[in-house]
Amino acid sequence: MLRAVHVVTAMALCLVLMACSPPTTETAHTDEPSAGAIRMAVVGDSITDADSPDLAGGVPGPESWVSYAVGEDIELAGGWARWGATTAEMVAAVREPFDADVLVILAGTNDAGWTSCEDTGSHLVQLARNAGVNVVVLSSVPPLDAAPQSAVDLNTCLEALAEQHAWTWVDAASGLRENGTFIEGMSTDGVHPSEAGARIIGEAIAAAVLGAAPR
Image (cartoon, rainbow, N blue to C red; front, side):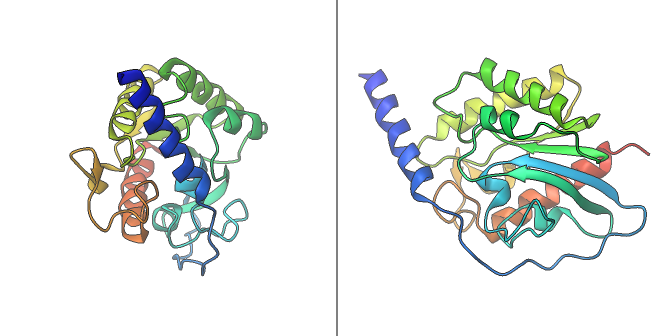
Protein backbone atom coordinates (compact mmCIF):
# COMPACT_ATOMS: atom_id res chain seq x y z
CA MET A 1 0.00 0.00 0.00
CA LEU A 2 2.86 2.40 0.85
CA ARG A 3 4.45 1.69 -2.51
CA ALA A 4 1.21 2.55 -4.29
CA VAL A 5 0.90 5.81 -2.37
CA HIS A 6 4.49 6.71 -3.25
CA VAL A 7 3.86 6.11 -6.95
CA VAL A 8 0.66 8.15 -6.94
CA THR A 9 2.40 11.01 -5.13
CA ALA A 10 5.31 10.93 -7.57
CA MET A 11 2.93 10.95 -10.53
CA ALA A 12 1.05 13.90 -9.09
CA LEU A 13 4.29 15.78 -8.62
CA CYS A 14 5.37 14.96 -12.17
CA LEU A 15 2.10 16.38 -13.51
CA VAL A 16 2.66 19.59 -11.54
CA LEU A 17 6.17 19.96 -12.94
CA MET A 18 5.14 19.18 -16.51
CA ALA A 19 2.11 21.45 -16.41
CA CYS A 20 4.24 24.47 -15.60
CA SER A 21 5.89 26.26 -18.48
CA PRO A 22 8.30 29.20 -18.29
CA PRO A 23 6.36 32.46 -18.24
CA THR A 24 7.43 35.64 -19.99
CA THR A 25 8.04 38.54 -17.65
CA GLU A 26 10.07 41.68 -17.32
CA THR A 27 13.78 41.60 -16.63
CA ALA A 28 14.84 42.04 -13.03
CA HIS A 29 17.02 45.05 -12.23
CA THR A 30 20.46 44.28 -10.84
CA ASP A 31 23.40 46.50 -9.92
CA GLU A 32 26.29 46.54 -12.35
CA PRO A 33 29.25 44.39 -11.23
CA SER A 34 32.47 46.10 -10.18
CA ALA A 35 35.78 45.49 -11.94
CA GLY A 36 36.81 42.93 -9.33
CA ALA A 37 33.48 41.10 -9.10
CA ILE A 38 33.44 37.33 -8.56
CA ARG A 39 32.49 35.49 -11.74
CA MET A 40 29.67 33.04 -10.96
CA ALA A 41 28.45 30.30 -13.29
CA VAL A 42 25.15 28.58 -12.55
CA VAL A 43 23.54 25.26 -13.49
CA GLY A 44 20.02 24.24 -12.62
CA ASP A 45 16.43 23.69 -13.66
CA SER A 46 13.28 25.82 -13.50
CA ILE A 47 14.15 26.96 -9.97
CA THR A 48 17.13 28.76 -11.53
CA ASP A 49 15.71 29.66 -14.94
CA ALA A 50 12.26 30.65 -13.63
CA ASP A 51 10.91 33.55 -15.72
CA SER A 52 14.27 34.60 -17.15
CA PRO A 53 14.17 36.07 -20.67
CA ASP A 54 17.70 34.77 -21.38
CA LEU A 55 19.56 33.37 -18.39
CA ALA A 56 22.44 31.95 -20.45
CA GLY A 57 22.81 35.36 -22.06
CA GLY A 58 23.02 37.07 -18.68
CA VAL A 59 19.40 38.20 -18.32
CA PRO A 60 17.68 36.58 -15.29
CA GLY A 61 14.04 37.23 -14.43
CA PRO A 62 12.45 38.48 -11.19
CA GLU A 63 11.52 34.94 -10.09
CA SER A 64 15.04 33.61 -10.65
CA TRP A 65 17.26 33.56 -7.57
CA VAL A 66 20.13 34.61 -9.83
CA SER A 67 18.66 38.14 -9.96
CA TYR A 68 19.29 38.52 -6.22
CA ALA A 69 22.73 36.89 -6.15
CA VAL A 70 24.38 39.08 -8.80
CA GLY A 71 25.28 42.70 -8.24
CA GLU A 72 28.30 44.82 -7.51
CA ASP A 73 30.31 41.96 -5.99
CA ILE A 74 29.10 39.03 -8.12
CA GLU A 75 28.57 38.85 -11.86
CA LEU A 76 26.92 36.12 -13.91
CA ALA A 77 29.63 34.51 -16.02
CA GLY A 78 27.54 31.93 -17.83
CA GLY A 79 25.40 28.96 -17.08
CA TRP A 80 22.70 26.57 -18.15
CA ALA A 81 19.23 25.99 -16.77
CA ARG A 82 16.09 24.48 -18.27
CA TRP A 83 12.59 23.77 -17.02
CA GLY A 84 12.14 20.12 -16.14
CA ALA A 85 15.85 19.29 -16.34
CA THR A 86 17.12 16.29 -14.40
CA THR A 87 20.70 16.07 -13.19
CA ALA A 88 21.43 13.56 -15.96
CA GLU A 89 20.23 16.07 -18.55
CA MET A 90 22.40 18.76 -16.99
CA VAL A 91 25.47 16.54 -17.40
CA ALA A 92 24.57 15.96 -21.06
CA ALA A 93 24.06 19.68 -21.68
CA VAL A 94 27.12 21.10 -19.93
CA ARG A 95 30.06 19.80 -21.92
CA GLU A 96 32.41 22.80 -22.00
CA PRO A 97 34.15 24.55 -19.08
CA PHE A 98 32.85 27.86 -17.79
CA ASP A 99 35.18 30.83 -17.40
CA ALA A 100 34.18 31.46 -13.81
CA ASP A 101 35.53 31.66 -10.28
CA VAL A 102 32.64 29.80 -8.65
CA LEU A 103 30.10 27.27 -9.91
CA VAL A 104 26.68 27.25 -8.22
CA ILE A 105 24.53 24.14 -8.61
CA LEU A 106 20.90 24.09 -7.52
CA ALA A 107 19.59 20.82 -8.88
CA GLY A 108 17.71 17.64 -8.15
CA THR A 109 14.06 18.68 -7.88
CA ASN A 110 13.27 16.70 -11.03
CA ASP A 111 15.20 13.70 -9.69
CA ALA A 112 13.30 13.55 -6.41
CA GLY A 113 11.21 10.40 -6.08
CA TRP A 114 12.62 8.96 -9.33
CA THR A 115 16.42 8.88 -9.14
CA SER A 116 18.50 7.36 -6.36
CA CYS A 117 20.70 9.49 -4.15
CA GLU A 118 23.74 7.67 -5.52
CA ASP A 119 22.85 8.40 -9.14
CA THR A 120 22.01 12.04 -8.48
CA GLY A 121 25.32 12.43 -6.68
CA SER A 122 27.22 10.78 -9.51
CA HIS A 123 25.61 13.12 -12.02
CA LEU A 124 26.49 16.20 -9.99
CA VAL A 125 30.11 15.13 -9.59
CA GLN A 126 30.39 14.65 -13.35
CA LEU A 127 28.63 17.97 -13.91
CA ALA A 128 31.20 19.77 -11.76
CA ARG A 129 34.00 18.11 -13.72
CA ASN A 130 32.47 19.13 -17.03
CA ALA A 131 32.00 22.71 -15.84
CA GLY A 132 35.70 22.94 -15.02
CA VAL A 133 35.32 25.32 -12.06
CA ASN A 134 37.37 24.46 -8.98
CA VAL A 135 35.12 26.13 -6.43
CA VAL A 136 31.62 24.64 -6.20
CA VAL A 137 28.68 25.90 -4.15
CA LEU A 138 25.90 23.33 -3.83
CA SER A 139 22.50 24.57 -2.69
CA SER A 140 19.54 22.83 -1.13
CA VAL A 141 16.39 22.53 -3.21
CA PRO A 142 13.12 24.21 -2.17
CA PRO A 143 10.27 22.17 -0.70
CA LEU A 144 7.93 19.99 -2.72
CA ASP A 145 4.51 20.47 -1.21
CA ALA A 146 3.09 17.41 -2.99
CA ALA A 147 5.91 15.18 -1.68
CA PRO A 148 7.65 16.90 1.24
CA GLN A 149 9.78 13.95 2.30
CA SER A 150 11.28 13.67 -1.19
CA ALA A 151 12.82 17.14 -0.88
CA VAL A 152 13.97 16.44 2.68
CA ASP A 153 15.68 13.21 1.63
CA LEU A 154 17.25 14.87 -1.40
CA ASN A 155 18.70 17.71 0.67
CA THR A 156 20.19 15.22 3.13
CA CYS A 157 21.84 13.51 0.18
CA LEU A 158 23.10 16.79 -1.30
CA GLU A 159 24.58 18.02 1.97
CA ALA A 160 26.51 14.76 2.40
CA LEU A 161 27.74 15.02 -1.20
CA ALA A 162 29.03 18.54 -0.63
CA GLU A 163 30.93 17.43 2.47
CA GLN A 164 32.39 14.44 0.66
CA HIS A 165 33.80 16.57 -2.17
CA ALA A 166 34.79 19.62 -0.11
CA TRP A 167 32.18 21.79 -1.83
CA THR A 168 30.49 24.65 -0.05
CA TRP A 169 27.01 23.65 1.12
CA VAL A 170 24.32 26.27 1.56
CA ASP A 171 20.81 25.55 2.74
CA ALA A 172 19.55 28.48 0.69
CA ALA A 173 15.94 27.28 0.81
CA SER A 174 15.76 27.13 4.61
CA GLY A 175 13.96 30.48 4.76
CA LEU A 176 11.20 29.19 2.49
CA ARG A 177 10.14 26.14 4.44
CA GLU A 178 8.35 25.22 7.62
CA ASN A 179 7.57 21.63 8.59
CA GLY A 180 8.80 20.48 5.17
CA THR A 181 6.53 22.65 3.01
CA PHE A 182 6.57 26.21 1.70
CA ILE A 183 5.78 29.08 4.03
CA GLU A 184 2.80 31.04 2.75
CA GLY A 185 3.88 33.51 0.08
CA MET A 186 7.15 31.75 -0.67
CA SER A 187 5.84 29.72 -3.65
CA THR A 188 3.57 30.18 -6.62
CA ASP A 189 2.57 26.52 -6.95
CA GLY A 190 4.14 24.41 -4.21
CA VAL A 191 7.20 23.72 -6.38
CA HIS A 192 8.62 27.01 -7.64
CA PRO A 193 9.62 29.91 -5.38
CA SER A 194 7.75 33.19 -5.66
CA GLU A 195 9.70 36.38 -6.24
CA ALA A 196 10.01 36.76 -2.46
CA GLY A 197 11.27 33.18 -2.19
CA ALA A 198 13.74 33.66 -5.02
CA ARG A 199 15.15 36.69 -3.24
CA ILE A 200 15.79 34.67 -0.07
CA ILE A 201 17.53 31.92 -2.05
CA GLY A 202 19.58 34.40 -4.07
CA GLU A 203 20.79 36.35 -1.06
CA ALA A 204 21.79 33.15 0.74
CA ILE A 205 23.67 31.88 -2.31
CA ALA A 206 25.39 35.23 -2.76
CA ALA A 207 26.72 35.05 0.80
CA ALA A 208 27.96 31.50 0.16
CA VAL A 209 29.65 32.52 -3.09
CA LEU A 210 31.40 35.46 -1.42
CA GLY A 211 32.60 33.18 1.34
CA ALA A 212 33.79 30.44 -1.00
CA ALA A 213 35.44 32.49 -3.75
CA PRO A 214 39.22 32.42 -4.02
CA ARG A 215 40.91 35.62 -2.88
